[in-house]
Image 1: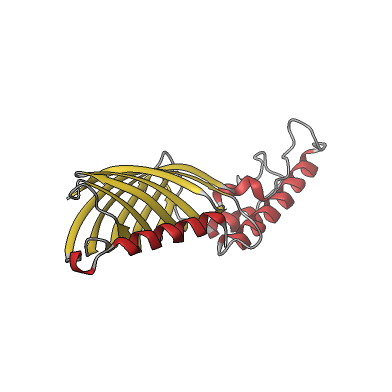
Image 2 (image 1 turned 90 degrees about the vertical axis):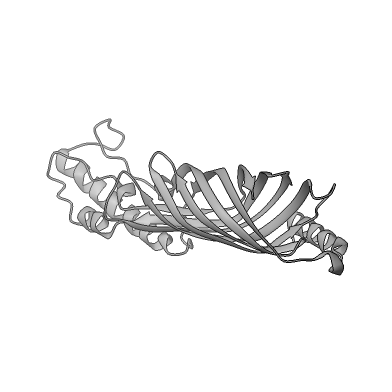
Length: 242
């Protein structure tokens, strides 16, 4: 068990220990957050779903690149030559601005949170849901200040606005600490594990059938597939509770 995980469990236990059975009553609360998520997905051979496609795209591109250089007489290192790539060229990076309207159901100290998620950036969109079965709060000062902890996950459909015909997804295991001050909410999240990417089979097939004798170099491999995994994603959001 890591230090961060142990600290999170201790905090959860502390919140539970102060909850008085007589103080629990049913509540329903609406929450709306706007946050920033810096995605930096890096591929590896064992990345779920997208890892195999990444290796296929790297192989297809490097074969096409070498054939293009031979067909045009370009030596390795020439400014006109097409350079080979490795997996790192097919990562996916974006800063998502995420809108998260949600609903919390439960008691004063323990609730269940559901969220709808819409994330946008200059070239990526992510649409899906978040579910947090752990949602623990400690109301203070007549409930005017309420620190809280949540833990759960999100699942989102992912695509790029600059391409058509691809499919993609984004899954996150996330914990967060926040505080409600009156109706204002401030939350700091931590993505313990993030995995996702986008894939276009048509682009990958076109790379495999590329004609190196033509004037154009091989098509960009990240048009066929981009993605990977990430740990330690830190996000911040603000909003309000009703």
